[in-house]
Length: 167
Image (cartoon, rainbow, N blue to C red; front, side, top):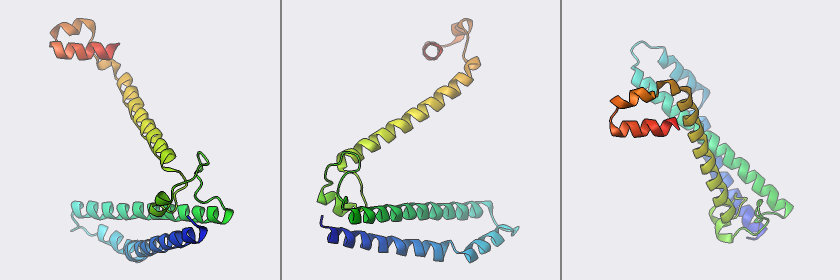
């Protein structure tokens, strides 16, 4: 992708995200809105479900704002790469990033293969992190597992599970 096309695509995406950010900050997350919602929380006739819904909606908006700000930072980084002459070069392998990918995701800094590899590695890390947490929790409660003399009163399926956990 030519630098002028990259600047145009990145600029258009930056403008779109700035509109979203401004809308979130102004319409939904303004200080007045926060004071109003806080004042409503102090009312005794406010239903807890309504408060929970409003809180969840506000947290979703704040999460969306964080995503938009991260995307804006990615666009700024891509613009810096355009100026440095490295836009369109994968940060992981140094190979070219395809024009189709750059058109679809102008702020990308990885080729499709390295992006997929990074996402797979993240998924594996998250899975192992979850498995380790479950394993730690299980070991913390080993005293709850049946002892050998307790296996006689268990059914065949429970005994097999208990035997497998005790290994």
